[in-house]
Image (cartoon, rainbow, N blue to C red):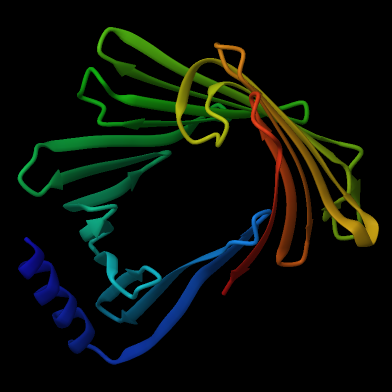
Length: 260
């Protein structure tokens, strides 16, 4: 399949005049309280033509992480290639309020995904025909953004919940919101808020304070009573943070993030 994808990428870039190549990426550098500086770089190249586009993502050593092509034919969006170490061919189309997708993993089975918004509720279902399907939903009401995710692992049902709101925001003459205090609360999520963790609770409070920057306080409590605290201040590309996990000593860090 990889040989076919590479050939298709070359075809797409050669069958029409190239509109250009776009470069984007993210640099992250972190200095810890031991004086050790580490850095990472993710670079994305997108070459576009009238026939479609080719996307290549490189790591800091300029090794290829992702490579895929995208094209639209008769209202169907095709995506072929490798993303997150998985090579697949996918197609999606929109019918009314519903977007339907089918994906064939190289050497694996076919999966079907469905997304849509119904009565103000945005719903997404991945691998809808599987008993282990993942379902997500979000809804905004009375200034609250509410989200839920459900997945099945074996006989266990994994449900993650989160809610957020902004208090004290003001609107300018163009209706653009500024200021205010952002408050979040989550349940059954890990400290990084990117995986299921049974029985945990977390939350954060953040606000912009003049020239100081954006100040944020976060907390997380596991089912085993392990507490995580983090205080951070972000100004421009820099974020200074203090973090304490459980009974370990707190640690300081300074991070620089540049997105281009």
